[in-house]
Image (cartoon, rainbow, N blue to C red; front, side, top):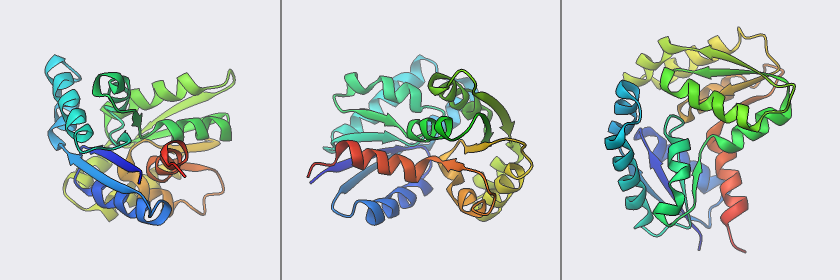
Length: 212
């Protein structure tokens, strides 16, 4: 049986990814580690040596639970986590990589919605690394939504993100954080591609790491 490990920086993501696995990969097992302080400290001071050590320690904690692959569901830290795979001894996938690759393939002018400033830069850098010569990346921060998430009002958070996304003059919309999955559903009538990371990351992980 394939086991997928997850490192989260918000407790709410455990249910999101567990439900996706029940739907898309019911034969797989899942293990989860949550450390909300990783994102809080990254937002406050960036990735310093102490935070890098703690991120590596948390990834090793997930690895000790025996997964075949680890998905880091934090877009702020995912790039750093991905590069730590060799040190961890288990492949690490940043949750937003499959989303970024799909977005670049779907259109030229890509709007990036992020509710934390710490996420906007890493997501845009990832998109740029996947981009075609004619790709244009439009930064579209929605920072007033994050306090709603922190307050636990996830519906209002998703609604605010969706409202903001509807104002963008772009070909493709990227919702940069896994916490925005509900907003993706609210934008199903938009008439343009909208990508958020959880579902497409789980699909990619199952495709690449599930053994028949």
